[in-house]
Amino acid sequence: MKRLPVLRNVDRLEEATSLDPAVEKTRGVVDAVLRPRWLRDVLHGVPMGHPVHPLGVHVPLGAWISAGVLDAVPGTEQASRALVGVGVLGASGTAVAGFADWSQLDEKQQRVGIVHAAVNIVATGFFAASFVQRSRGKHTSGKVLSYAGLAIASGGGYLGGHLTYRQAAGVSHAPDVEATFPSGWQQLAPLTDLPEGALEKRVVADTEVVVFRRGERVSVLSNTCSHLGAELHDGYVVEDDSAPGGACVECPWHQSAFSLDTGEVIHGPATSPQPRFESRVVDGTVEIRLPR
Ligand code: FES
Image 1 (spheres, rainbow, N blue to C red):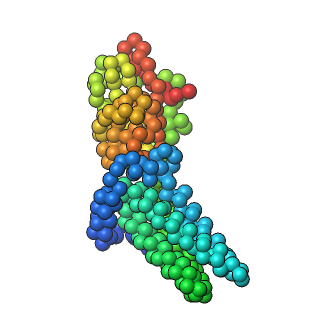
Image 2: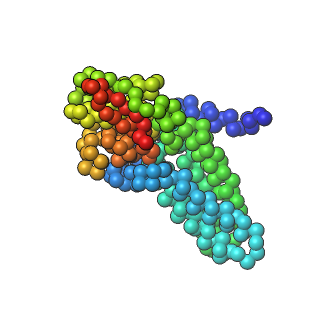
Image 3: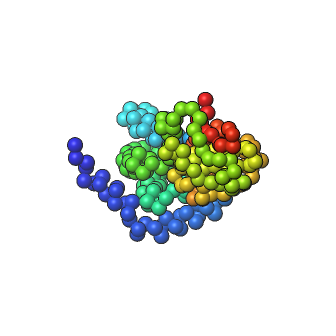
């Protein structure tokens, strides 16, 4: 089946460098406003293990769609008005989480993302105007504004789908090592070949891993960052009291931090953990395997 011609324009947004000045300005504002790292972590969804934004979107869309249904039923004006208001409030909170995620995407994703945001802001404006009209008792114009807002929000939703399903924003980029890594212990390297206290990239059974050695203790994670696929061995080792074992690897692209001992996310924007390997030393050789 052929794709609708108008939808092919969405692909062109990815290459639209004319959007870059707006992207840069907006990113500067987001970075300035969402400065505390704990706040960003919460907005990214680190405590949940999934991005918050797609979950939060249910509030405005659910409320607005419900208001649209009620608007077709006589005598439900007050309920519709309340739903429109809830949707406007929900959209504002969801937008903050969305901007936090957006500010840590790559340039093509940010171009699509800024149009997605602009369309949804316009849609929210229509619903806010609808709420005002309904509060003044002008329910007919309130309904018209709501239905127009719903149509615009559908366009915004389509762009959000493009970001997630086509451009893979918000999904884990870590490889599925459980499906590809052989079972049992695999040789990594002689212990003395591994540098002390530094990140090292190795390839075991066609799988890239990042290795960190402290004496005979060797931490091994998948080398591909779960956020957007950067190579973690190019990052940094940082100490963080909240991380099991204290030591983390910090991604060179957007500074996600993963516990070197467990692979869990200590700081976002990543929300998916890094695949971890168990290690042991046998006759001076380090071996690794998937955790049981
Ligand atoms: S690629 Fe973005 S934090 Fe690693």
